[in-house]
Amino acid sequence: MTLNLKRLAVALSFISFTTASFSQIDSTYVEEEEDYSMYDDVEDVGAITTYCSPKIFDLSPNRFLSIGYDVAGNGALEASTEGAYKPDAAVTRNNNSDLSYHGLRINANIPVISESKFVWQVGAGFNQSRITTDEIPNSNASNRYALLRELNAGLTNINLNTTLFKPLGEKNFLILQLLAEQAGNYTLGSSTDGPSLENTKYSGTAIWGKRPHDRLQWGIGLSRTYRAGELNYIPVVMYNFTAENRKWGTEILFPAKAFYRRKMNARNILLAGYELEGSSYRLYNTSFTSQNIELRRSEIRLRLDYQKQIKGFVWAGIQVGAIVNYSYNIDDLDTDNKDFYRGFFGDQTYAFSNTLGPMPYVNVSVSLVSK
Amino acid sequence: MKKSITLMGAIALLFAISSFTSSLVSVNAGGDDIIGLWEPSNGKARVKIEKIGSKYYGKIVWLREPIDPTTQKPKVDKNNEDAKMRNVPLRGYRLLKDFVYDEESKEWSGGTIYDPESGSLYSCVITMKNDVLNIRGYVGVKALGRTDTWKRIKLKKKK
Image (cartoon, rainbow over all chains, first blue to last red; front, side, top):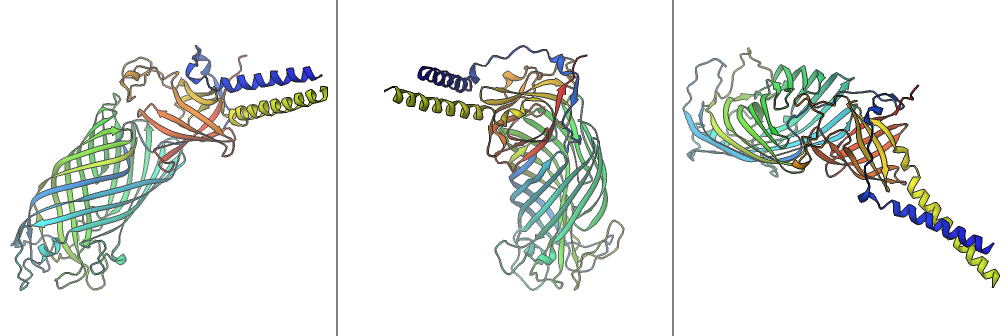
């Protein structure tokens, strides 16, 4: 009996030992030949609904976190004095200066929920424009150079945004984007010159789209936006496409941006096209007659954008191009401080009617991405 | 003397049983439920998850479009960062690697998932509920990731 117990103990110990040893054989595992045709005919056991993906093949990488620096200049600023200018009025602009700017751009975009049936991302951005102009006379006697003095404080844009992607089955989807931004000539940390919550600007875009296959995604929608500087309501068209040879494609959300994409390989991408950038910047504590004034700043950035994988999910990007000014006018929101819609046909007057000439620009960035 | 030997034998037996059962638990307890055939939500592939040693691996055993339309040859891993891997056929490719089952959290973790469409390798954690796998690939931390659902499938029985 004693012997039998010992033998059993030894046998069990041996089995236990060999089981443990088996778990260490990964490196010597030899793949068996397999007849893959046996996997052609299958039946479901689990039940899930198939949803379309929010992406298509080869889109430029989605940026979780991006830190960049932007340098632009010089552009010829021709500014009017404070007044009331109809949109189509002939304006004498004799406050001229060369203007350039540079600044930090930090953007984050974090997925809160990212599943096949629903994607919800939350993001934040900090974009700075440190503006320099030609030497400004010290005289405060007139407002001739007042605008230049206010711009010299620099412009800052802080925003919070969220994106919802809801697939409606295998082919259709909805996208909803919301943005709240604080744009102005304020300085972070200062208690005297803003920003003020009541001047927050809200934008939103809703798109219904189709994804017929892995290389095409298109959609149509409506947008409330400040990309043109002032408040606008515009239709939008989305068209993301990748050619069958996977060498080129498009990334379009018209009119906000349109790019031709050239994929050199999975780690090097070149984009060529434009992006419309803009916002309404509150000018705080100015020497102007009105205190509720906003710079309707909007620019078209024509560019070549080269993106390269550095290592793993870290990518670097360099943009080289020209900024074409779309709007640099200033609106007076009157004493009730309520924004208004001028659109393309409204005739509300501007407080300043300005133009800003084209300028070259460069942007370099490093990003943590998901492909 | 005989009594003491019997006691020693009993202790050895208890130790061995304990050791054996604990090894069985660590090998099987729930972890092997993941073994089998699965289909990602896009339906473009079928993945066979198997156990090699103490870890779980998943390889592509079927592709909906096995031929590359550009080359008219079987698809290969052409997006891989490693140039030496770019001629490796996708069918048979092990895209899930090195998962270990954690009995406490009921999840398979510590492994990676490879996305052949982008050539990216993500950290990954897998959970299972009712024959559906939730596969979360992520960059660095779990928050920076995306979850895909895979359904279990099985081979049809030959008539």
